[in-house]
Length: 535
Image (cartoon, rainbow, N blue to C red):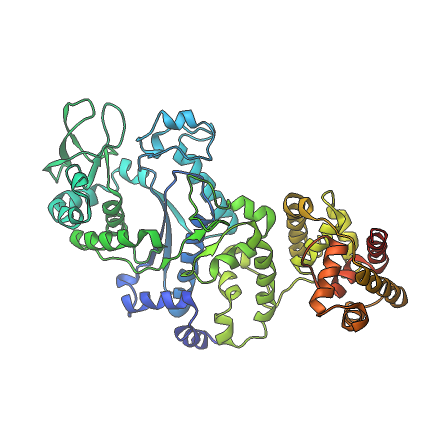
């Protein structure tokens, strides 16, 4: 495929990253002036441990970035991951140790609060490091920018001066959106108390915009005159966001549905400052398994490490790619399907026409990070994750990787993790999922009289077919027994459910022919014998 053919296909693609990238193409039909890079930004509030909701914003923004580069034939771009670590700590997160340390520093900038983990110079530095470690692990190309660094170093001084110059215009935007009581204390600027170090929510009088001088009443009642420069103040959230867009020249930033109003107000403020509101996508929020919004402070979502314990990096990216404008639940139960669907889409990619490829999530994911380099379009794995979960479920909570690979030898050639690294990751994840979630819940039931008769016939058929039978032949044998009216199954589904419940201890399961081929005919016959002994 020529580059021009790819560009033409991308410009008519309905895939959401290309639809978002089209906004930037309209913004800069002739490229950004001076061939400057289009600036993408993601924002992060380090008041709690990073979770997948944080990571997804970097991934999705990267997908739009790569789509824009494809649309333009390689126009320059940058991605800034911005941490708002000058924000004052409002409450102590539920899932953080050393709560007393945080409680003693409520209201102070996150970057000036001791690290309760004792590993970094501040609470914000610890949480920032966790986010960066994972972004680096996944291979994202980004520049990390810290609010505290920008405020403290003076890099934001010119923009802060502009905010002070536009103080009245900003108030005209914000005050009508606030309750009457809040209007009395609202100021676009939040000074840092010279006595306590707390970020104050107090009225502020602008004395001299050029020098950054303001006047306010401190917590102890004293009237203070100090500059906003040098990290002695920060801005209210919506003003801060607009100032950042203005100071950095941000062209694209997406956000969650809960920030819809913030986008509106910040968009008005950046125009007052003399900047331009960036393009962006407002995405739906993730929900936990109870349908509740995920919160960093509650810790009720999945952490990045939890997903990677029970799934794979590829499956995480796949799950986050799809339908960003639809709310999705985020819990361990969604992982197995994501793992299998990723490999289904990846296996289909090589044979798809270019328009279909551009709509395939894997096409985008393979370009999102360095981890996709060298991956083949038609790569696949020989065993599904769901089948692995059934195998380890039968083996029990103490199953080992060595056991699993010995059974995989019944199904694939050269069954070694070195020869099948992607499958090796799936084996690791399957063992962890089984140990923590599946094995404790599995319970085989005794077969009914008609089910026992059918199992006896299946055992006899397996004996005839022998250990070299193919998965297809095994499946046919199972299928024919279920169709036989003599055993009283109203539907084939009833027969398969009986097999799952009596042999595997689960209400659902795999394609039985594939499972028997993987587990082995002799071993499956032992399962049948155990079930019959309980009848």
